[in-house]
Length: 203
Image 1 (cartoon, rainbow, N blue to C red):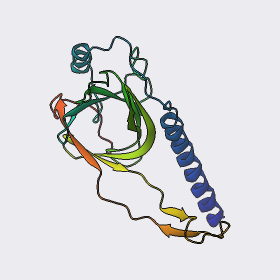
Image 2: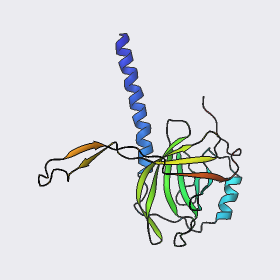
Image 3: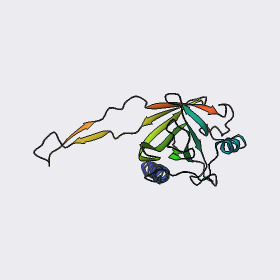
Image 4: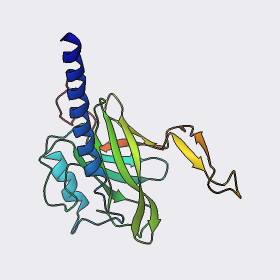
C-alpha cells in the first residue's frame, strides 16, 4: 500500500509538471515566424506605464552593452493593448537598435518563467531580414540575485546527427553529444532601478 501511494504521488507530480511545461511551451511557440510591430508604440508612454505599475522581477528596460541595443521585457501583450492576466507570460520588445531599419516597438520574442528561481525560457528571433526579424530560437534567461543583470544562454539539443560522415551510405549516420558553450550574451537593467520591481518572493 505504501509503495502504491508513492507511485501515485510521483505520477501526479509528473503530470502537473508536464501540464506546466506544456503551458510554457505553448505560449513561447506561439511566437510568429516573422516579427510584428506594436501599433503606435511610444517609448516615453511605455516607460511611464512601467513606472506606474507593480513589476515582476524581470520586467523593465534592459541594455546590451556590447552593441547598445535596448529591449523591454513586460507582461504587455504583443498587441500592445493589455497586460497579461496570467503571471508567467512576458513579451520582449525592441526599444532601440543601431540598425535603423528596425522600429521601436518590434516584438522580438516571448518568455515564460520556469520552476527555477529567476530563470526563464524564451524564444527570440535571431536573424534580421530588412526591417523584420526571423528565425526564432530558444534561450534560457537567468536573472541575477539583485535583479540588475540577465544572462542569455542559447538552448541547444544535447545531441546532433551527422549524416555526412558515412557518405556514400546515406542510410547510416553518427550521433555526437553537443558541448554547451559559454553564455551567449548579457544585458543590464537601465529602467527602473533594480530595487523598484515588486514581486513576492516564494520560499
